[in-house]
Structures are given as structure tokens and as C-alpha cells.
Image (tube, rainbow, N blue to C red; front, side, top):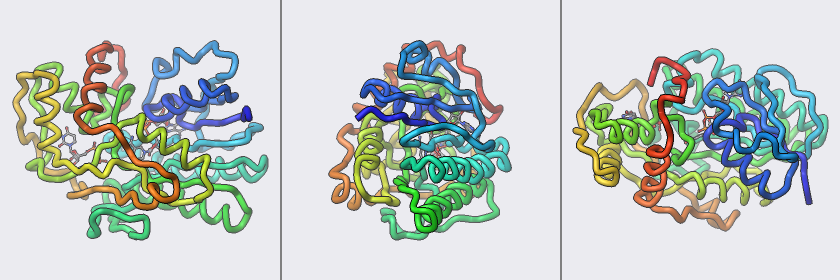
Length: 321
Ligand code: NAD
Ligand code: UDP
């Protein structure tokens, strides 16, 4: 059945891949974005399609639309981006959720919400199951994002309990792939950009902190499964393969054939989680989902994409890359 689907943050890294899938499936797609951390090139190929519409709007302001489903992705996601204007980040998460949920309540739309592994903070439980309540510093530099996302989850479940809004909340773990902003400051985009330019690869701290990296196509399969399923969540979506940041650097250098040196450029940033790996038991059993693309293969595809673009055409959204 063809649906009218709103994607907030639809021009971003994940949002643009989501719009691709929804447009290809024949849905009537409304892509809403304020272009804080993205640009039109991500969705330029969709402009002009009869079932794709672009709306420039900021989710902190109310939305008046008629839709059947909403994917709520609008929020800066890279640490440098969300710390650039932390008060705005909190507003985007919280007021964005309120506006999306108000719309959903009014038009009886189903809401998918992109939450994050950051709700677990710097975790003492490893790997992280959904039942873990997290260890977040509420007054640290990452709090605008972590606590904003935690408050958004609260709003999702309160609208669900109080108003019967149909919700799907997923907690996304580090995801990478084509259309990451080359200057977003995230570890995968930084290392690939540095490797392709022959610049030093910048480890923060000694590089022993870990992350689990999911390729974008796998994650999008998880989005589709979650929206089609019946579990309100929260459900972890991520790749349980865990790597140190140093291992990632070595892999990027090897695959790209770069002559870059791996250096320790600065101390570990405040509150930077030391370890992160999703427990995806719930996604496996409730959604029949698990990632398929190993890190090496995903990096090969991502590096090929970074080689294909002109990085100078990308506007650094903040000075913090
Ligand atoms: P991104 O920065 O590429 O995309 C976010 C999009 O939201 C951008 O297009 C940006 O311009 C838009 N946006 C930001 N503030 C807005 C506002 N106030 N109004 C309207 N649009 C606004 O990041 P992404 O990686 O595609 O992340 C998408 C979502 O997934 C975010 O909510 C993020 O928190 C979540 N997430 C992503 C990851 C990941 O690893 N990529 C991990 C956890 C959670
Ligand atoms: N990192 C790094 N060098 C970089 C960028 C990031 O060592 O150039 C580290 C960062 O300190 C963190 C990890 O890589 O430990 C992942 O950082 P990212 O910003 O991608 O996302 P996070 O998972 O911290 O939100």
C-alpha cells in the first residue's frame, strides 16, 4: 500500500538513504530538513521525482502536514556538530519530538524514532542490552545530545501510553557509509579523509577505546524491519563486531593503500565512552534482523565513495571537524 511518509532529517546521511528506499518503494515521500549538517547533494537525484517533495523546515517549530507515517531523524549526530550549539541540539531533540508526536497524535500517524547508543553513556555493562539504563553525565559536553535523546525517548513512550501513538524506537550504534559528511568529525569519515589525503590519522587518546561499526545498508534493513514489525522498542540496531579505534585506523590505511601515519593527536575527549557494543538479541528475535556486511567490506565501499566525490564541494557545518 502506498503511504504518505514524512522523513525529518531526510537530507542527512541516514535520512537520504531512507528517502531512496521509500521513493523506490513508490511511497509519497516528504523530506524535511533545515540543512544544518547536510546539503542538497544528498537528495539531488530525488528532486523532480513525482513522489518526492523537499520541505525546508526546522523541527523546533510545529509541523502541519497530512501523513501516514513519520521517521524522525532530525538531529545533529556527530559530536562536533551537536556540541557546536548544545542548546539548539537539546531543542531539536526535545521540541522536535514534541512537534513530531503532536502531529502523529493529530493525524494518527505511526512514528519511528532514531534514538542512539549514547543513551547508555559510558557504559558499565558490556555489551549493552536495551534493559541497561545507562551511565550518562547529565552536565558534561555530550549531555545535550545524550539527555536530549533520552528525553525524546521519554516523550515517545508517554505519547504512546497517554495518547495511543503508535511508536517504533530504535537505538542506533555507530553507522557509516557513503554520504557521511567528509567534515563531520566522526571517526570513520575523519580517518578516510585523512588517509585519502595522505594526512596524519588522528587517534584521540591511545586508540584503545572501542566502537562497533554498522554499514548503512544493514542499518536501513533494520529500519524497515522495525517499522514493519510490532515491537515499540526500544530496540538496539548495530553491528556487534567490536574494534578498537586504532584497529579501525589500521584497516582504513591498509584498504586505501595510504602512506598516512597513525598518531595520537589529542587526549581522549571528556566523557568519550571507552567501550561500545550492541546486544542485538532483541532485534534478532523480534525483527529477524542482523547485520551482514563485515567492516572490511563496508569500508571498501565507503572509501570508494569518498574517492568519487569532490570533498571541497562540502561545506564544513561547524569549525569543529
Ligand atoms: P546527519 O547529521 O547526517 O543527519 C541529520 C539531519 O538532520 C541533517 O540533514 C540535518 O541537517 C538535519 N537537522 C538537524 N537539526 C535539524 C532541525 N532542527 N530541523 C530539521 N532538520 C534538522 O546525521 P545521521 O548520521 O544521518 O543521523 C540521523 C539520525 O540518526 C539522528 O537523529 C542521529 O542522532 C541518529 N543516529 C545516528 C547514528 C549514526 O551512527 N549515524 C548513531 C546513532 C543515532
Ligand atoms: N576519534 C578519534 N579520532 C578522530 C575522531 C574520533 O580517535 O579523528 C574517536 C573518538 O574519540 C571516539 C571514537 O573515535 O572514541 C568514535 O568517535 P565518533 O566521533 O565517530 O563518535 P562517537 O561514537 O564518539 O559518538
